[in-house]
Image (cartoon, rainbow over all chains, first blue to last red; front, side, top):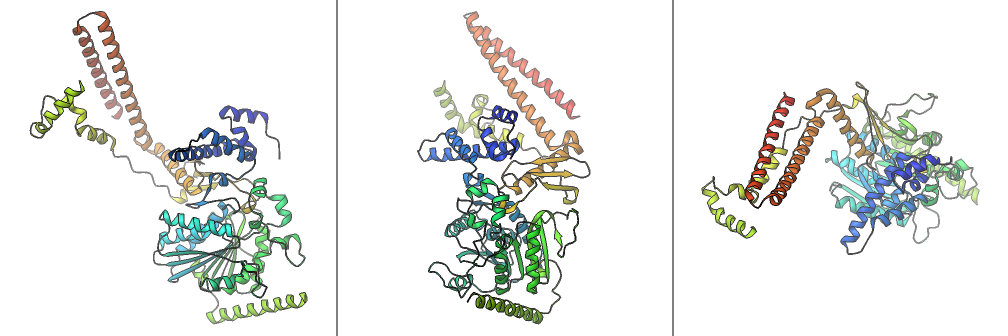
Length: 392
Length: 193
């Protein structure tokens, strides 16, 4: 990282004595000024609230402490306590991943497509795995119910971290309290470990997804399947993530756990996707949206989905899928790439999902669709048998 | 003075309903509800409608650094840049932490800029600016008048024992002030035409 120029530091100091400290994480005067403005507002608000409670609080001291913490690399969202996800203000806490703008862009594009759908079922079921703060189900509920009062929504968020689940519950209450969640949407969060197989030994607290869903008496079949799993490989974690992400955000939400079988670094990063795709098949999801790190990983995930032979179509979305596609290099790809920016997510659809997304009706008859689902089950179960035997 | 005024108001309140041209009216003016309505009436001026910007007229950019995104980076800036294709006006907004709010603010800014370009003097910003400057001018005038009156009183008090001269001076100043406002009105009319 290049050293900050003395002239820049001096310029910053002339504007505000706290600004040079904020230049350390921001590296850019305009960004630092924005952060200072938000921190000032926050300090003022907190001081006012404390004074109203009868405690004395000096906004200047408060601001100084906040700026020092920010200079040490603590994410701004943890300091301010919230992050905007679409139109929603989502509460953030250390120990739970901060929602990202790119995720919001993908999810909002998906809901925009779904909003225009003519033949949505009377109850649309949305399953979000690795939900974290619960931002994705809440945003989908907010965006969809605003325009589609005719569709009942049932949303389920799943996470392995208790802290994340508590925060998701809190966010759900806050959204309801603000009146942003209409009665047509039911949101729930449950605890499950996605990497656990149904026939593994189950510890007392943790269950695999299937059992957790049975225990919570939620329906076994879901229409839309969304996930933002940990997808960074260990090498990429040390090379490409920023200091503030490495130092303050939970590694559990960023890097998949160490696999039992020896795997290369890239395979380690991709661990979640075969499991997620198998779960999407088990719940008979019509639309699957999985977030990925970049175009290379998007290509690998799309390949995995293709090999399952149950989807009618597969697309790769960039950071801004609603923008017209950019012609950068135009390398030939097996899958259409939509939008601008980095590769961000993989979208798959089958059965009625195609017509919901506006891609036209499915070319496969319902009977053939059921048959290919069955085939895929058999293939993958024989694959697991093989793994099981080889481990013995 | 306050007890006397209080007594007056009490005496006048029943009379007000029947006799509209009460002699005390000018004295009691701040006590009557009319004072509130007068100010709000001035404010509620019909603004020209906001200009509608179509989505195919603009290019929207979310300014992002190069390199990886998603979980790997935790970005705090969500600046939005709008480019209006027919005129080439570029507007950038990074006021809030919410991209959606920034988009709305940027669109409003661009709408204002376009209106200024298309309507000139009759645009929303121009009308608002004119109103603001008018208010500022009148406030300044009032302040000047007040201090001149105070100075005059002081001068009158020091100058002679009779209060008559001092009052005269105040009246003179007030007349002057009225003349000034009259002149201004004429000037405003000229501008409007």
